Length: 95
Image (cartoon, rainbow, N blue to C red):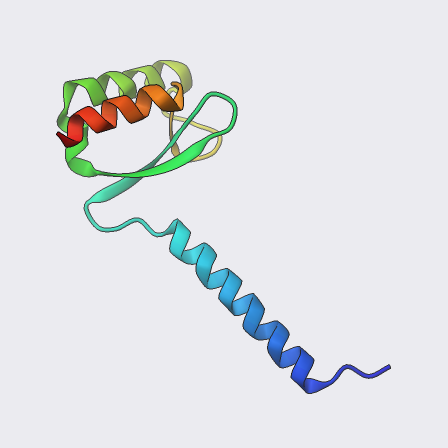
């Protein structure tokens, strides 16, 4: 059974499309950084670098340092708090 060239071409297009979506999800705009938040399942947030100087955000970073130190297994910045708590802190920083 032969596979037509059209099928191979369409398969390559689908793979390219899916890989470009993955690449876009991994990108972080200039002036922002990604953090992972949650207790069991981690959710990714992309937030402005300017939040780093806020005392409430610094408290969250201190919690992360106490829990994980500077050598985290996933390689990303993970904040060990409930997602709702993180969203509250971020919402207060936006206003």
